[in-house]
Every structure is written in structure tokens, then in C-alpha cells.
Amino acid sequence: MLAPQSVCANSVGWLRAALSCLALAAVLAACGDDTTPVPTTTFLMSQATPSSFEDYRLLAEDDPAARESVFEKAVAAWSEEIDKDPANVDAYVNRGAAYTASYVYSGIREDRDVSKFELAIEDLNRAIDLGPKNVEAYIGRGKAYELREEREKANEDYQVALELLNEAISLDSNDVEAYIRRANVHRFTRDQAKAIQDLNEAIRLDPVNTLAYYTRGAAYSEMGDDEKAIEDFGMVILLDPNFAQAYNVRGIMYGRAGAHEKALEDFNEAISLNPNLRWAYGNRGNVYVGMGEYDKAIQDYDKAIEIRTYPAAYYSRGQVYFLKGEYDRAIQDYSAAIDRNPNHAQTYVDRGYVYYLRGEYGRALEDYDTAIGLDENVPYSYYYRGWAYLSLGDAPKARADLNKALELGHDKDEVEAALKKLDGNP
Image (cartoon, rainbow, N blue to C red; front, side, top):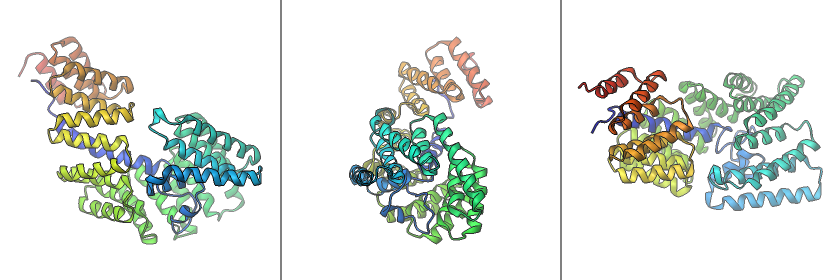
């Protein structure tokens, strides 16, 4: 049976990249699964006084079993404050944050409870009507829109927040909190360089501000400067040695740098501090894969899924089963990941390849077609579909896909080798 030769080697690379990115997505998208936008020397403060979407995510990840009650209690508490004072802007902002978190945790993206999102927007709109210069209201509404994938509306709110923060800093150039807030908004708008400028200033003004170092580390990570990110997360740990997520994200940086032992040390410490931190299990599993410890990796993915079902863990565990040659289990996990996130093109490509290896070329083509439908600019999707067509004897379609893969930048030697086989050359 003809087969592309690079896929097994690529699978490990895909696993490392995918899991690191998926773990960081939650950590970095809003300054963290387990962080708070309130600058303080300890992140544990937010557990007592949740006041933003990020705070509620922190509580949800710390205690997954009590997640729903956390949101319900928060909504009830802020509703009571609003009953006492219908013009309480902060109460609307905070209840909107609780509704936003409740929306995010209400299910997978396609099945989430839209009514929770609508309630969040209603509260945040009310907060803005009552307090048109309330920065947190615009940031909160922007985050809600972003999580709903309404990026244009989110950016509009972030721009208003930036204008208000610019004004605040012009009035008080020593306002550390304003610099950190503005840095976070710059990060939400994908401007890491400006975020780092603001965080540099925040750290100059307050050299022991844990949140400033953490946020700057996240910004450096997104810019690909892992060395500086490790330094900043190290400062966070020095200032707050009980902050589990700091160990987790530094472990990711060490893992990306190939420092497996240091990465394991950090993930072990993160899990010791917070046994419910699912990301740490998933990331430790990723390191075990890089070390060839597949069974240990599977155990960690099992634990991550036990804490909270999520696509990344199923996808990653599927990759490990593929590497172990357990194709039935690989397909089961890829399918579970697709059920929970049907818009991740890579999962279809990987499942398609397993179908290919089993000689189920029709199913493989269906998966490759879906992957290309989701993202038509990924060269390896065409490359592998080309092989499937080649195995089915459809030379014209195989040639078209292989040439398309080459056009999009797939490895030239691999494509040329495939084309030689297509032409009947050894």
C-alpha cells in the first residue's frame, strides 16, 4: 500500500504544537485560566472577591465539581446588590462577568447556552448606560463578544477601553493598574509589543507586581521569546510560590525548549498545588510523549478528561494511540474530539490518515474534504488527500492535490517523490 512517509514523524510534532497551543489558548487569551486582572502580590485574592470573567474561570478550574454553584451564587449575590441599588454599575459588570463564564462553561462551543451570553450582554450594556466611562464594562463586553466569536464588536469595545485607559494614564502616569489593564487590552487586540511596553512601565513603577510579570511572560510567549517568558514566570513563582498556573505555563516554555526534566518538575509542582488543574496534566502528557513515555502520557490525558471533558485531551490521546499503533482507539478519540470541536481541521486530517492506513479510502477522503472545507490553505491536507486519490487510482485528482500542496508550500522533495510514484517511477 502506498503511503506518505513523513506522517509518523510529523505526528509527534503536531502533538507537541497542538497541545502547547491549546493549553496556552486558555492561559493566554485573557491573561489566563487562573489569573485575575487585579494587580496584587497574590492571585489567591481573586478567590475571595471574583470581579471579572478571568476570576470566575479561576474558580471554575480550581473546583470543577462546584462550577455551576459558583456561578449561581455569584449571580444571586450580584442580583441582591442590584436590587438594593439599581444604579450600581460595578454590580452589573460583575454579574455580566459571571454570566459570561457561565456561558463558556455551559457546553462545547456549538451547544452553549446562548441565553447566558444574552444576559451577560444585557448587564454589560446596562453598566455602560449607567457608567459610560467604566473601563471594565467595555473590557467585559468585548471579552463576551470575543468568546462568542463576534470579533468586530469585541474590537470596538476594546478600542473604547484603550481610549479611556489612555486618558487615565495621561492624568496619572504612575497608575500601575491602568498600565496593566491597557496591556491586557493590547493583548486582546493581538498587539503584544505595545502590551510589553506597558508592562515594562508597570514593573518599573512596581518591581514586585506579580500580575505584571505574569502578563509580560504571556506576551513574550506569544511573540516566541520563550527565554524571556521563562524569566518572567520565574519571577512570578519567586513572588508567589503557591501559584500553580505559573508553574504550568513555565513548564510549557521549558517543554517547547526541549528541557523535558525541568518541564516535568514544573508540571508536577503545579499539580501538587492544584490537583484539579487539567491543563497541567495535559501538558505533562505532552512532555511524556516527547520522551517516548506513551503510557504515562495516556494516564495524564485520562486524568485531564476526568477533570473536565475537552477536545484537546481527546485529540492528544488519539495521537498517542496512533503512535502506539492502536488505530481503533485513535479513531475513537479523534471522533470524540471532533464531536466536541467540529471546526478543528487538523483532527480530520489525522483521523483521515488512520482511515487511510486501514484501507478505508472513502472515509479518509471525507475527512480530508472536511479539513479543506474548514481551511483551504493548509498544504498537508491536499498532500494526504492526494495520496488517498492515488491509492484509489484517480490519477488526475491525485496530481491536482499534490500540485496544490506544493503551491501552498508543502515539502518539495515529498511532493516530487509522490508524483514519481504517481507516474509509475520507483
